[in-house]
Amino acid sequence: MQVNSGPSNRRTVTNEARRAQIIAYAIETIAELGYAGASFAQIAKRAGLSSTRLISYHFAGKDELMVEVMRTVLAEFAAFVQRHAVADTIAGELRALIEANVDFMREHRAHLVALNEIAANARGTGEVAAQTTAIAESDLAGLAELLRRGQRAGEFREFDTRVLAVAVLALRDAVVAQLAKDPHLDLAPYRRELATLVDLATRKETS
Image (cartoon, rainbow, N blue to C red):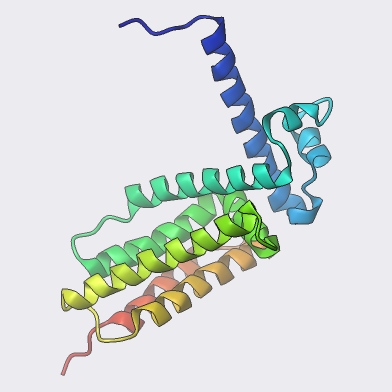
């Protein structure tokens, strides 16, 4: 079977590359100027585009672009965590997950700052708000299930898994908020103490 490499296929590849470029500059712009300041004009300026029309060609409006930014960040985050959050025990997996979250912050600061900016400014019943809610629920459900697995395996003490999952995610988001204020924040102590705190909170008591 031959791959079609004609003009139509090349245009599709070019369009996808342009969309990806716009999304990348949108992430940078949101992280630098905040959600409100991330206009098409500012994104075009950073992308070196002569006008906003090329952005409008690929994205019907700001909401559509914001949703694509969120999807891009989440896809990269999920791939990163999958590569790094590997361990032989569930307790080890939880610690690796916490550490991978902070490692992603260090390597992709703009991504998580942008994601938090979008989430903090999502309003109403539009697609951005719906996507924000879906992300939060997915994060919460996934972490709560990991905690339940630890309990079933006898590695964690008994506790309300949803409550602890909410607390852990709130701590993670607080670190992102600090990173948004200080781009040069040393994340090493946050990585260490957050992982230790979660370990102490979940550890099974021994007599």
